[in-house]
Length: 354
Image (tube, rainbow, N blue to C red):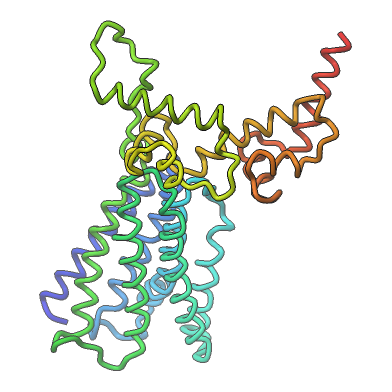
């Protein structure tokens, strides 16, 4: 291994180690922090374990690093989901894909199950593909402009990098233009490490990803002359309010932010920024579902609608099926729709009897 390649790998390992420590310090505040730490440690282990011709292949201290490096694609997918899915809830079960991939790698390394190795590589490619899909699937509804850009630049770039490395490792002596594949790999590790470092922004959204100035209606300086931009935003907010509360456009099937922006006659980026910065929503679905769930709660608490099926209420509010409605409802209220209805109607009948 050349001095240049050693410097590249050493720099990547040092940066990834710092990222792992920083992520662990913030794991209580951020759902993505523990997955960031796992990804950083796995990638650092890969940078060491994949170094060419430096240590005996069967060195005992190298085995744990090889196992950690095998789990990198699964760790990357888990981190992508945690960063880009605002409804993500961390749990020990979420680590199962990583455990499966590492376990299969252990069978190959320690058990001599070499026939399992193609399955390990196939799973690595699958997790890289899932990470790319996760980045693209929610991009249209993402209201955080910085994160929308990083979805493509980072997640897809890293996903393709992992896929490329997985494939090239199957080749005997990969190289491009006379440059050894291990050197190119080292350079890619450094680039990915720096890109990963930039995503520390994603793990503290209250500081970076959602600028939350006070709503226009709550500003304390009543004597200050409104700026033109404020007046324009106030007019757009009022037009948005009318569409949502009076016209109830949230009931429309397949409503997208592009369609809503067209209805308002404003550029899509401006509407994204308005909903994100003024209404403090990080994705379009949470904004729309807020109105849908409010209508559903009112209907479930209404004694005159006590016999109306819950499915009918969900469909009338704009949900397309009962499953997503039940999940969203419980996530917001902590109760199923049936439990909520029973509680509200019992309280209503009790108050009427008094």
